[in-house]
Amino acid sequence: MSGSPEEDDLAAAWGAALEEDGVAEAAAPPPDATRVLNQAEIDSLLGFENGGGGAAEESGIQRIISSGLVSYERLPMLEIVFDRLVRLMSTTLRNFTSDNVEVSIDSIVSLRFADYLNSIPLPAMLGVTHIEKWDNYGLVVVDSALIYSVVDVLLGGRRGTAAMRIEGRPYTTIERTLVERLIGVVLEDLTAAFEPLCPVRFAFDRLEVNPRFAAISRPSNACVLVRLRVDMEDRGGKLELLLPYATLEPVRELLLQQFMGEKFGRDSIWETHLADELLSTEVALDVVLDEQLAPLSSMLSLKVGDRIALGVAPGAPVRLRCGDIPLFEAELGRQEQRLAVRIAREIARGRQAEG
Image (cartoon, rainbow, N blue to C red; front, top):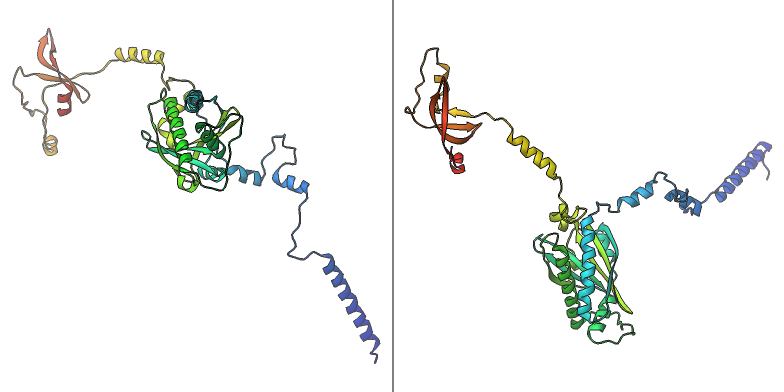
C-alpha cells in the first residue's frame, strides 16, 4: 500500500538523515578511546624539542620533576674530610684483610632520605651509627658484593676466584659479625677523619638488614650520600655513608670553610685598628656624691631655695662612674680654683654587680 507523494518524500528525507548520522558516528572515535602520542608530541611535552642544548624555559612537567630534587649548598670541608677518610681506609682495610685494598670515592650527592631508602639494592646490611657529641645518627650501608668479598677474604678464600653468593637466604651470624667488624673499622676511620676539624666519635649502634628498621631521619629530610668503591684485586663492592644535614648542623660553619683553620669574618688589621681607636676614645666620668630615693610628690613640690641634705659626712669617699658602671672610689678635694678627685682604689666587678 503506497502513501501520498508527500509522505514518500518525507520518509526519503528521514532515511538520508539517518544514514549521515550513522556515517558520522562510525568515523568519530568512541568517547573513552585513549589517544596515543607520537615521539614528537612526547618530546614537545617534556620540553626536549630544542635538542636539550639551548637555555629555553622549562616546561611544566620539567619543573614538577625538578621540584623533587634536592639542591643544597656545598660543604667544601666535608669533601676534604671524605678524602682523608679514603686515605685512612686504604691503610686500615689493608691491615684488616691482609690484602691489597683500594678505596675510591664514586660520588658525593644530596638527596632525600626516603629516596635513598627506596634505592638501596637488597640484600644489604645497614649499620646505624650514633654520633654522641652531635646527638644524632648516620648510616653505613654495605652491599652484598662487598659483604661476600669481605667474608671470603677474612675466611681464607683464594685469590683469583669470585666470591660465592647464595641468594635468597638471610645472612648468617658469622657474616653479620664480620661485617660488624668491618663497619667498626670504617667508623674509627671516620672519627679520625673528622678529628682535625672537631673532636667527635662515631659509635656503632646496631646492624639492620631491612631499610625500614634503619629510619634515622624523616623521609623528606635532606642527606649527604657518599658512595665509596672498595676493590680487593678481583673482588670488592660498594660502601655508602649517609649523613643527614641535621646531623651536620652543629659543625655547619666549620664545614663551610674553604681550607682548614679558615677564620670567618675576622681581620687582624681591622682588629688592630679598632683597638687603637678604642684606646683613644673619650668617655665621660661622673662623680657621685650621694644617691637618694624620694617620692615623685616631693620632687614636684621643690621650689627655688629649698635644700637637699646629702647623707654623707665631709671627707667621705665618692664614686666615679661611667654611665651606670661604677669604676673607682676617690677622695674629693680642691686644686687651685677647681674641685678635684683623687682615685683611692678600683671597684671590683663583684661590687659593681651589687651597686
